Amino acid sequence: MPGQDNDRGQWSSKLGFIFAAAGSAIGLGNIWRFPYVTGLNGGAAFVFVYLLCVLVIGLPYLYAELALGRAIQKNPVGAISSLRPKSGWIWVGGLGIVTGLFILSYYAVIAGWTFGYIFKMMIPNELSFGNFVANPLLVSILFSVFMLLTILVVYGGVQGGIEKWAKILMPILFVLLIALIVYSNLLPGSSRGLSFYLKPDFSKINGSVILAALGQAFFSLSLGMGLMVTYGSYISKSDNLISSGIYVALADTAIAIMSGLIIFPALFAMNQDPAAGPGLVFNVFPAIFKNMPFGIFVGVIFFILLSIAALTSTISLLEVPTAFLVDEKGVARKIAVWIVGIIVFVLGIPSALSQGAVGWLSKPIINGMEFLSLMDFIWGNLSLAFGAFLLSIFVGWVWGAKHAAKELAMGNPGFVRWAPVWGFLIRFICPITIFIILLNLFKIF
Ligand code: TRP
Image (cartoon, rainbow, N blue to C red):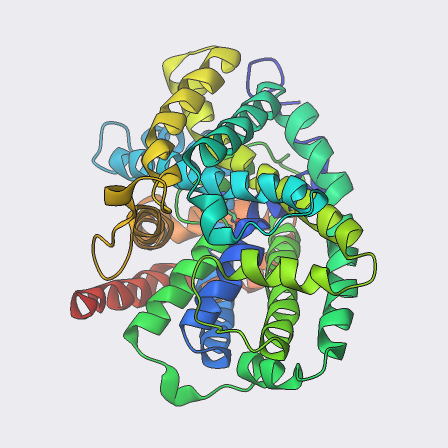
């Protein structure tokens, strides 16, 4: 197998890649971020724009990252510099790596809360979410533990670490969510939630709703920073990238939609505010479990699964900078993992302390966003969209849509017929749409 003789590794099979990529895509983005962003942006109309973004921009762009990764078999910086050595394009790969570091820095903080909630469910207590996240010692310990878990798994390498976890636990999460959808929609008063979530009021769509939907699509599919370039580089040449990409996008979108189908009906049944922001899920889910038969048990299982879904995502975020150090700087994998892990840990401390633990970090900095929310907006939204804008130009125009399409047709000869359509999407629709949406940002501030 190519790449097996060095420190890079390869997925064991096509299914191995699908599970790992879906494991990266499915995470807090689906279950924590999607519902609260939907709630803040008015409900169903946002969901509609989000689905449109996934279909028209997310999926075609996903193929661009996968094709680049598998063709060159490198991390984003390496892939770009192999095609255009010593050009400014290398900075695009560099931006991806920096973005990954920053996203991981606050993502692992929230993952830490999720992990902490496993125990909070077990031990009877009245501790509110607000007081939970404002406890400096608690959040720091949880953040450290989660970073350590991530480091230890990535330490194990591509097959042993990442694949194994994703394969077993994602299906269990799926089944549990189905059961919760049924329960939540049987609560009295839940139907108003369903119409908030699914009956679009198109007058609610504006520039900032569209930007939020686009950012959410990139964030949820793990796009815009070269993660799929890196994961694509471990795919075998004979695998079908087209069908793999569809499975990943479908699974990711399905889990996000399902999460909303639990949250909004329950939320309206309990007369809570859908626009509550980042704490939404941490308040609503425990409230659901409280009145449910076997609620403690279900709650513990839920937060265990959510922690693992978050772990398969933090692993992927750590993997990109690690692969960069291994490929480009010749650092041994085990050392690279620790270097990256420690950098991320330092970057994440202000986020961990910004939910009430330290006063000045918790104050709104701009547009009502405190430190962690600001990080999420800059890196988890803007930077991903900007990265995707540049990378779609790189693949569509610099490397060339023809070369990329050839890579995509490998393992799927029928793609040749669709190649012109895809070429049009990646060369025109993706960059132009993203550009217009980003321009709109200046009106927001
Ligand atoms: N997609 C993940 C989620 O929804 C988060 C994530 C993992 C991510 N890797 C990424 C986001 C790379 C952007 C880029 O939780």
